[in-house]
Image (cartoon, rainbow, N blue to C red; front, side, top):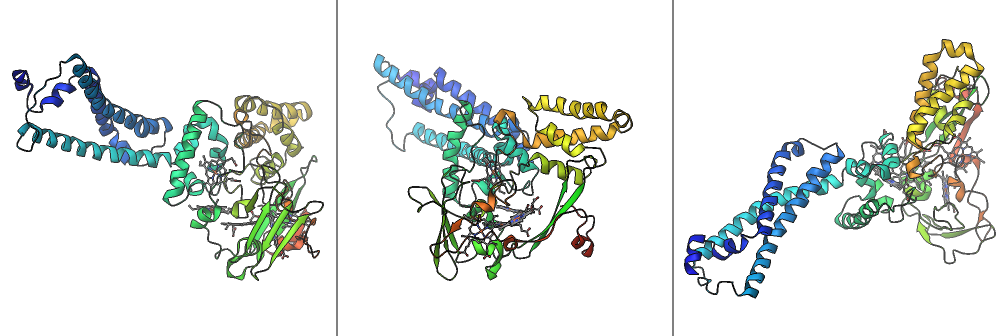
Length: 479
Ligand code: HEC
Ligand code: HEC
Ligand code: HEC
Ligand code: HEC
Ligand code: HEC
């Protein structure tokens, strides 16, 4: 036996025990993963990985293999030791285990050195993995069907350069851990294919917006009123254009006035009870103002919050679509026409476009084929001469329509026109009028106002050429 050890070399039992299939496989896997990792290092260091599958390989598959291999080595050793103990083959005498034992010393050095090397590799690998899981690529594209609606909308929004995690997780360790825990559940839901379609809104466990949005937008900053010009094309042959001009009283800052000052200004707290999952029906509102007074407003015919869930109002009760902005077909076509992507001189183009967009298509591919055919077909049938002369313009309009469809309708996720309500405004969805409906009253008879001048000055309403715009030198302005 002793002689057997002799030629086996200095790191006696370990080397002996580790020459088993499982541990050797582990060693092979670890080395392969390490080599792979080194080869991928230049890609990793050169910046964000933009292809989701390369990302999965670099940051998830390679590290997983590395740690799997690492775990196999001691497992093989342990299994072999147990097996040989059972059969009585395990050597009984090893050199004494003290620091004078050269073999033991070497073993300690060896383990120390490999652990160090592994730590260096592992720290790099996990750091990369964590960063990758926080990237827009991972959030938006890895599970592409699931996140496609939100990812597409995000890419076309004012926040296209803001990472998903800036709003969905925000700064600090505790929300980071919470998100990783709920994220694991979501990954399983995707693997098992039992995630909800569409993904429900609101996000039930979203971090309070004031801890995320205010990293970039601080309430003391907003203030100035904002002029909004909203173009609208009619359903007639001439697609008659009218404009609505509003001066939004955004307010805020230290003054505590305007829309922001009243709801999220310093010292203000609004709580409300909602009776549907989407928070579209709000029977009870409690307002604690800057003067320290608390007023309760009750929708007509309802009593107290009862057992309803209560929520503290924050940014996303109005800005629930700061980045996942889905449009309704009328609005989307208006913007495309105002931008010139759909020529307003094509007869009935507004009416036809909206009808075509509202059609039923089983998939995006089907829509991409049928939408252009439908528009061209309409002009061929009703305006044959025009179809001949202005083919390219009609084709351009069709491309704009397909683009609008692709940004807003996702049959695979059952997301269609209006699936996700937008709480800013009151024309397309209840929005502000969930509370400001002139039906929420306090015990002393005050109401949450529906006064048309409270939130905006209506400078012009659906006028062909609003005087205010020419006074301001903005006669050509669209939104
Ligand atoms: C500017 C902040 C912001 C960014 C950036 C952002 N989101 Fe969101 N997200 C929101 C808000 C706000 C909601 C709605 C929350 C609510 O109403 O409870 C939301 C909702 C969602 C929902 C639920 C469905 C829905 O539309 O309401 C999903 C899924 C989602 N986001 C995924 C993503 C992904 C993926 C990214 C990155 C590509 C991303 N988000 C980037 C703010 C953001
Ligand atoms: C990482 C920084 C960052 C975070 C976090 C962030 N935003 Fe923004 N937001 C911006 C920037 C930058 C712009 C300006 C974009 C532009 O002008 O094109 C902007 C623009 C906006 C606008 C104006 C959009 C428009 O149409 O002009 C609104 C509203 C807004 N953000 C709301 C929010 C809300 C609500 C949240 C939290 C859910 C949030 N933001 C989180 C950086 C951020
Ligand atoms: C009561 C509803 C409401 C709440 C709550 C609210 N906002 Fe706004 N906010 C608005 C409206 C309305 C506008 C005007 C822009 C529009 O109509 O789209 C606006 C505009 C903005 C703008 C664009 C400002 C500009 O000058 O163009 C930013 C940024 C913004 N909000 C951030 C926030 C943040 C951050 C919070 C939370 C601290 C918040 N808002 C809370 C209703 C609200
Ligand atoms: C959850 C209910 C709720 C929603 C939703 C809501 N508000 Fe309010 N709002 C209130 C309450 C409560 C008050 C204050 C009433 C008081 O002064 O006691 C208020 C006051 C205001 C005021 C001041 C009115 C005045 O003359 O003093 C403005 C402006 C305003 N809201 C704008 C908006 C806008 C714009 C939206 C939608 C983007 C909106 N609100 C959505 C509850 C709400
Ligand atoms: C509680 C605040 C509030 C009150 C009260 C209010 N509005 Fe508005 N209104 C808004 C907001 C917010 C928008 C959205 C602006 C935007 O699109 O960014 C809006 C948009 C509009 C628009 C533009 C519609 C479009 O095509 O986009 C019109 C018109 C309008 N309001 C008319 C009225 C009239 C008329 C009244 C009185 C009955 C009224 N509003 C009361 C907050 C209010």
